[in-house]
Length: 195
Image (cartoon, rainbow, N blue to C red; front, side):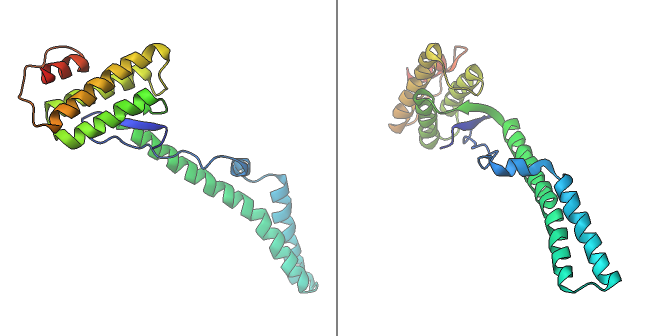
């Protein structure tokens, strides 16, 4: 599991956001494009090739000219390709973020909530129970804003994880009867379903 998931706006499976980078490194340095060394290589190769043809210089110099020209053009072409790939990844990542709210799952309390929700989804099917479990995920995702919970927020996330887990356990025994869901938060709604 990656360190983040996207909680969709409506109850359903969690979304894994696309990876933004391969790990950085030298490829990022090569994205600068055409610099002075590349211009000198490309221009020198072109002039030398023209001189071989026009002045009748030895044929082996044409190989050197083509190699210089190729090296001078290869790095800018690679940089353009890397920029295009990066733009495509950023667009995919942005589209994934538009589909929901990011939730950092690096902390065990959040992983516990995500696991309980996935178990609830498998057990329940669409309905009030999954809606209440989804609300618990949304509440945690909005509170955390894409970061791991601080010490004061762990209890908030754990209360929701325990409630969703208890609801999934209850639904494993059979469906819950429809009830009037009172209460503004997910824990109150889940407690109404469990009573």
